[in-house]
Image (cartoon, rainbow, N blue to C red):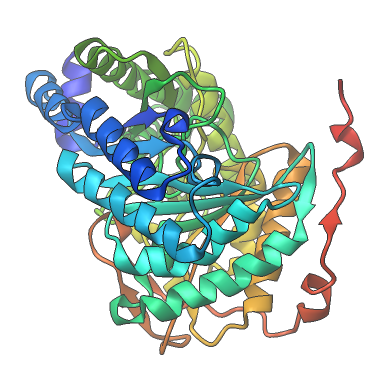
Length: 457
């Protein structure tokens, strides 16, 4: 108990999110107005006490709960019968935003489509509505799954998403293209992810569920600092890798137990089944709450230095090994997030010249989730963005893991400038992008086949 209090008071331990997943499949109707009415009623009924419950638990247990969120069934599956033009989907987005504001959640995820093998007419309409939907709502997050290990990569969808990201940046340029911060393109998207912007409620889930995402980069950093301090006092050298791994595992266990407690309590009070704990180490812009700082504790001067990918792989593995012992149900992404704008240590590494997009891409081979919250020049071609999405999707497809791209071409800004997003989204230096063209590649169309090891039955 004393250890937990210390982690909360001095080491930035928090429960990053309680996310209520809600199935909207029973809200489908051929009439758009009826569908919107059903959606609004179901969300505001099931989630009416979500925020208060989270606040009560935080107060009673002394555990900070930073966000309360909602994830819904991918909306293209719900509204295929009633949405005939992109503007119809925008009306649904406004309804979702209104419901999110009514119940007081920070974000609502699930303005989504699953198009890893092909796009239905409903899927394409939703995708084409994203720029306008992101521009006219505050709390809606959108995700598009364009590939999977079982199906390959839908390159038509990848190419289209390059244009959609550019259009979203343009339509939200008054806010430094903030709409792109609420839009993510995924490969192997999980059905139970509580973290935004990629959260949606999978069709295999129950009618409603409670998922919790824990976070504790500061706790892990402090534990490693103390470990090396003790080792230096005993034998004059840093702890070896065996001791380091054991320290991370033990710390991850303690962090996850806090999340398990909160999840079970929220489930009981809301009368909604407990789903999963997501073990991900999720940083914030706060000093000391950084995954980058953990990597520096492990021994690299800055993230991006030789050894960074190995250090991150080890960190991710030990977090999972410690966390799975602390909860009966682990899911979501469960790894280490490496967003640029949300992690002061990552920002410092970019500004020092240690970290490039190419090195970040290599790091995503061994962590969750992918190229995250990266600001790039606003004049970056849509085909280049599509090429970046294809590369990241290929990593996920071949390695049987979730990968994603949340990239922000900030209109009117170029390399050397910074962009301020505010809150947990932080700020980011504009990073350079490879200027050689991928236009011929991404314009081929069709689908990249699934890898040979996908054929398991």
